[in-house]
Amino acid sequence: MMNFHSHQNQLVATAVGASVATACLISAYSAYSRRERRKQLTEEISRSLSTHKSSLDVNSYTSNTSTPPTTYQSDEFSGKYDEELIREQLARNYAFFGDDGMDKVRRGKVVVVGCGGVGSWAAVMLVRSGISRIRLVDFDYVTLSSLNRHATATLTDVGTPKVRCIERILKKISRWVEVDARVDIWRKEEGGDLLEGADWVIDAIDNITTKVDLLKYCHDHKIKVFSSMGAGAKCDPTRIQISDISSTIYDPLARSVRRRLRSQGVSSGIPVVYSTEVPGDVKLLPLPEEEFQKGAVKELGVFDDFRVRILPVLGPLPSIFGLYVATYILCELAGKPILNPLPIKNRKKLYERLLRDLLHREMKLTGETINKLPIDEDDVSLIFEDVHRGRSVIPPHNVPSRPVLVRWDIVKPLTVDNCVVMEFGEAEKHYKESGSREDPLKRPEDIWSCEVKHVVNRRAEELRREREWVM
Image (cartoon, rainbow, N blue to C red; front, side):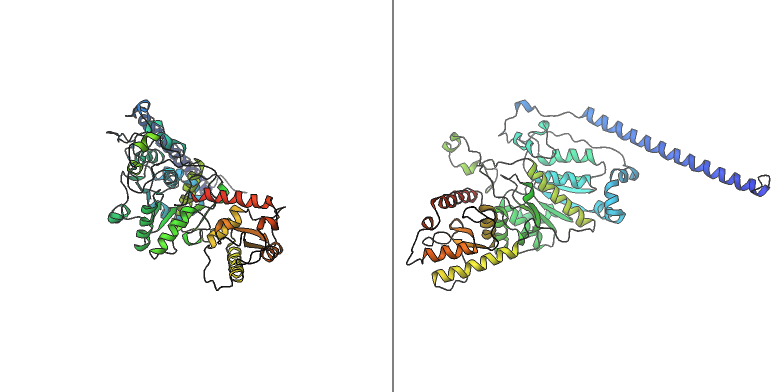
């Protein structure tokens, strides 16, 4: 038993008591300091919100206004933001990436080219996750029609540059962020100016020519770039995925970008987010007839090659694209890359086999050596997945255990809309009873039925509508 009357034990007890008291005082002071800093921050935010005045009269705005505002008031905080509060604000990210990973994220610089539905969401989530330096590049202004998809735009932002309204919100989210907002358009002639110092570039440009120029420039100058493909006229979030530009399965914009890049010597090395969904039964919003009467409609565009008519967009889709972009870049910067993005379909080998089998059947049908068919793997994916839903065109439209692509009408050329899916046995019957191109025996509807013919025609019409979206 301890002798509390011992002088040595009394000294030990006194020392322990003093240490506990000191620790309590330090803890209490730290808690008090945090409360005071939070109180100060709350007061600054309240003052900023109370003094912010909009310089716009939304009621006087019309959707086709192009005149930029003459003044813009930003919300900036004064003073230094405490590191302890930064770490508390980013606590979940620190828990996920660790100190080293978050140090890399916070030192990273990202340039967002195109600050609409995709770019705005990417910018917001990057800054919320710790990015401290970001440059926003867009020449466009917020319109009423922007509000269904833009991450930061409100009614009071109508008529202001998109980059300015994003800048204001980013500074409300992150007191320490450095935002460089450029009301400008990226041009390949001056490409390096806006991309200087970037660890990552986000391509969220609508115009295909500028998009390809930006991707080519980044590829040639070893600048990491992530590109967003088309989110317009689509609604199925399960079709969205990330892959290299060379592995995009089917997307009209992705196909056009890929082919243009390939013609310039760039075949891979650019990650993209895209959707394999075929656009639904929607159309570009028409221009008023009086605009056509005034002259060339093309002249209504802000720049050459930029679309004039409005593309239908379901707001959540571009936001999902933007979140995909931000997540990928954050993981790359933190040193925890997504090494093998899981394709939604992951059926490349199936498409290769279907194409190879179709090539052999076409050579047998024509009696000629064919080196290359007029359709490719993208078309095979389109025909099998999107047009025929992975099912045989022959009732009861079962999922074939051994699918085959077949030229529907042997008299007509092989095209995407003259190619259908059948089970292997059905394909054998089809070719046997159809005869040859020089000596056809039966029409396809005579082999199967008029019902099947109507199905083929209906799906050909779906393809025709889809082609209207190919850029």
